[in-house]
Amino acid sequence: MAKPIPRATALENLRFSLTYTIPGLLRGAFTTQPRWLDLMARLDTNRRANDVVTKLRVRYGGRSIWVRGPVGPVLLVLSQGDIKRVLSASDHAFSLASPEKVAGLSLFQPDSLVLSAGELRDDRKGFNEAVLAAEERVHPLGDHFMTVVADEMDVLLAGVGVGLLTRDAFDAAFARAARRILFGDSARNDIRISRLLRALRAEANWLGLRTWRSRRNRALLRRMNGKIRSYAAKAEPGSLMAMFAQAPSSARTDPVGQVSHWLMAFDVLGMGIMQTLALFAVHPLKAAEAAADIRSAEEEYGKGTVAAVTAMPYLKASLLEGLRLWAPVPTLMRVTTEPVDWHGDKLPAGVNVMIPASLHHRNPQLGYADRFAPEAWISGEAGEDWWINPFSRGRGQCPGASLALLIGPAALAALLRDRRYELLEPQMRADRPLPLTINAARFRFAVRLPGPSAPREAVPEARKAGADSRPAPSQD
Image (cartoon, rainbow, N blue to C red):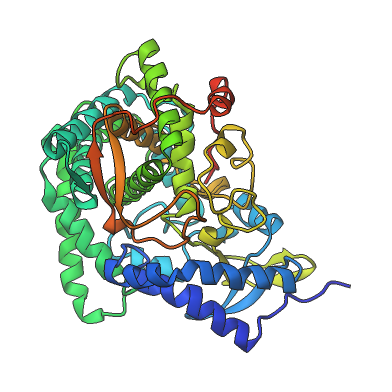
């Protein structure tokens, strides 16, 4: 006889809310709040939440359980099998458009793929995948994108010299690269469009509760989409806008309505790049392995070429590790749109399903949970593990994952090629478990030229592991 889905006790609900749900809301669902993150990092709230979830896994034998969410009951997914079941299922049955996403994202991407359902989602998914070349290892515009990224990282490093690199300085440079990739070179200095999106994302954190700001928000959205529309009309060669003409679309696709999500995704990727740079800064031997990866590929294929970047398995694996250790999207939410059989029980339509990815990525069952382990991606172990989903998987996989895993390593290669870094803030040590909670907005690096204090040669075992393999990214 099937057992009903267990329910967390009042005390378990309280502990989960205090360590995960409430800190997640304070962190910001759509853009991070640095001041709150400072407090959370000091308390390492995710470490406490991980302890709570580990105890829940043990008590309930890995079964998913009902917990109390901000707006009602939520199914908390606690096993690999259930993660696989949800993420592998049809995105029509397990929709990405959860109530929280609708309340927030509708302010700045009301017609995006994420908020679309049924046939309309299929229509927009085809368009997104075509423009972003989701099924391709290398984007058709990859060579040009590599040039853009190298240009902006060179400008950044020229300004920094041998001095201080801050998160703000990197973000400004990477945003210039993002605008050039999305819209063309004419958008390089269009900080206005980035500021419009930033303002709308900050408002989205309130999940539509500040209804008195609705008129202002609609005006901001009109201005932002007006700018996107003008760039789409130009369709500058070498930009993603130029891909619109050859992508499948219908009268309902709304190409312009997809773009704000892509622009936001570049911010998420930038965070992952900086997290990876921080990991290299506190792991000099692994930084040396990355440097060897860069030298080997560029000696064979040329500096900054797409062929060289795709021949840097250790760098790509390291970026995936940066995204695993501190998931920029900490929670994967789904909502059932129809009744679903669940281990003999029945989930009705309208159930919110929560996968706390940032905690599952640090599951104590993983032998490398709290350490920097690019080798786990090179071997394929991490990519095949359903606990780990930096880009989600299945029909809900991020269509820009392949492009991100091209642009991200290109940026890291440009940063690491002729420099080494010392992490000044926040504090981390390679000989201790890495914290689960950090404030990535506070990253500060001392930039140095390579010298005797930075190991030049890679660990032989790591070199051998990476020579003939490529890291397999988790699909989303």
